[in-house]
Length: 396
Ligand code: SOE
Image 1 (cartoon, rainbow, N blue to C red):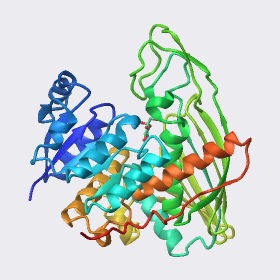
Image 2: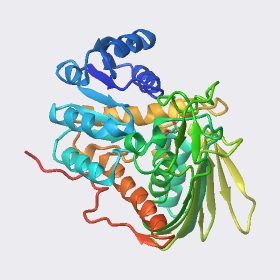
Image 3: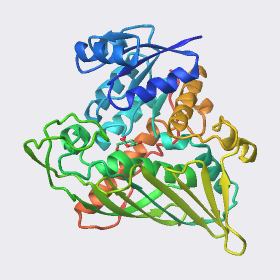
């Protein structure tokens, strides 16, 4: 059966959702909804994305749409995802799952009980060498993990004339850099190690406390505005350093920032075990560094023939033909549609596919970091009352 997709919120990331879906070959792009009928029509033309709907409710009423991609700004995630689930649609939401921890929990509970696929685009899981690192750790190849560290650094907010809705707590949520990109790192660290972060100690900072940009709707990576606009006071963080403790005893730390010249999309994750280490960098995604103490270190280049069977299906080209961001994104979307085709049964969920449970879990982490900082930089444990990474659900 050909599945139909509808997209709500045709901004920066929408084109990549459409690209990923088209590459699957068996999904029809039915149409898109935006902030107005006019904007939907314009974007539908630009993206060749089927029909334009006057509102997202109209899109949800269309029986040809089976899966909704929610790529709205954060403050609309809850409303659109909840309405989609209630309309019986499978949902693929951009991260963060919602603007607040309470909203994320509400969405997780609604998804858990809905018998529908619910996916959050923690897309960095889709890289073959990320899956390779996960498989190696799960198989004990680096021994007991003792240290998990890295960073997620960008520079697109360096200029004080750069602005984005992500910096407005009403639209982006209380956290900016941590919610936008720290969230990706934490998800990846937990996914790769198979261990939970159980406590955090965070130091947050706003390097650029006043911004002068005319266009509040500017997209990520849009760069500085040509002219200065009215000054806007910024309260959310653009820089963060966080110490971490994992449930398996490992220690960790991560630095996150979006005002760091030269760093474009610099996500790095390293895990040191008692027997060896693995390290991966998003900007060199076809290489996995494998470190040893008493023999030579190696670099594993992405080669389907050399990958663990669990990672192999995430690599599509032979060695020497680099794969990157769009390919990893497509892998996550491909897993999402595979789950939909299996009736979204919890036991059929591809292991690497991030769900609303992971989105909720992630919001608990970001919330704990905000609390840790607000309390003056104290250890804050993660309040995780009901094991949300299990995708159990009530059967109706
Ligand atoms: C902007 O910081 C952004 O687009 C993030 O929102 C994405 O999650 C990340 O993948 C790339 O950078």
